[in-house]
Length: 276
Image (cartoon, rainbow, N blue to C red; front, side, top):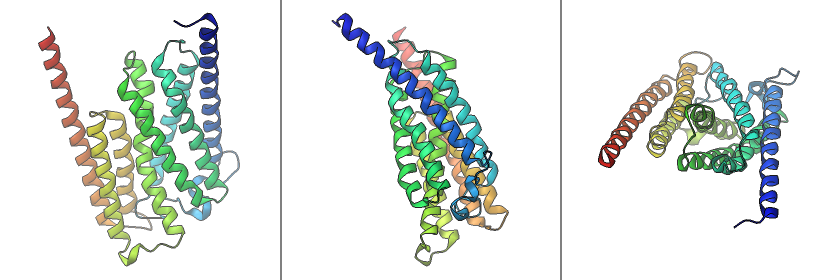
């Protein structure tokens, strides 16, 4: 049994984490504002010599794809407010506080690395961000949302975040390697574009199976791949094989997600009937 002092200490710790999450969200939003070029700086797609532009590599999504960040940031702000007003006994959000904070700070760190021309540093940062988001989703899978709003705000936001960063990690890796002088062992842009798009599709399939067909990760990952296809059908870096592979990957990931989600629904109904 906890003593009064231990309870008070735990409460203070909880309050501190709530504030940390909110401050981290503010830092991430400020970073996104700087990264957009709205504050007079260089937009991300033009920073680091344009290494992350839509035509930098065959796996780079076309420009409009990055509009998904507006939805993700809005969700993260609402999530931070949700954290601020959580109760002391809210175990789910207490467990989410650390990985959520790390994801927000890593997001801002990635933007700063690119803005200051440290493209090489962006790679370990985005890989760490991907790992932290997987950790976050592990917590979400092991705990249940309190309702529909909670599922949309928390599970939906971090699902979009995870799905998009899967695509962004592939694009970032290609950009870093290209900027470093890697020429793909002479295989050419088409071959590498097809390979990376196929791997991204495989990641989407594995993610759908692992997360039991959740819609948000699939939606974000397929959004990114769809804009990869658009970018390869038009513009300065056309690659029809890459575009076709990206479209096929989108179709496969969507079908697997629907199948897994349907089977999970059937299994749930069977358990309910058995328990009745």
